[in-house]
Length: 241
Image 1 (cartoon, one colour):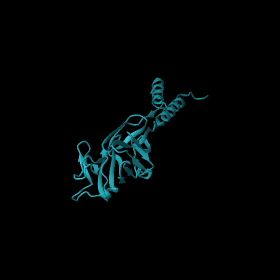
Image 2 (cartoon, one colour):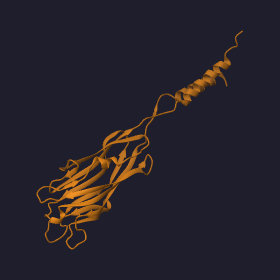
Image 3 (tube, helix red, strand yellow):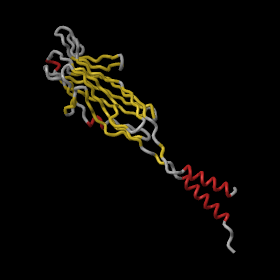
Image 4 (cartoon, helix red, strand yellow):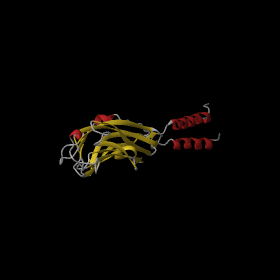
């Protein structure tokens, strides 16, 4: 190898090893939910006051309905809680990204003594297709719906931080943190419950922060270039008399 070739090789090795970072690939995924296990309400008798139904936009068992504005007919303009499908797309550092959504229309239904409080399970699954497919998590939220005599609005509980702590996401090159709830459109968080006035449609979100983690490029090539250049200089150094 000529001296010029050796110097060019060393320079190239040093150039590729300049301090730099590899940035994480964008995130893509979806969240989906459904309901099951109604309890303490009538979903099968002759005068039903709660049920789980399908919705066209979100799929099977994705809406809970309760109550009626008619004293003779079930489910006339009932209250409706819907598990909404979401798309998740993150390309840069972002805060307060929606990773799950519930939409609740609180109808001014007639009071029914056996519907003061009932339970339902909300099954949430968050799945990612990028940067690696199938990385995600799921959790079952054990909810209680309290339907008091009007006009106070209904209340849904329990939305606890312990439930959110059970959601864990491992995404290469990213950290996912600060999972929390947020309500909008006239509905509010009241402690660990979600409160919604009569006749109002509100949304409850689970949100998270996504942060890229820089990955340093290895400096082994840089070290190899320096070692190779030093060895070449020693071989070409004139012998001392």
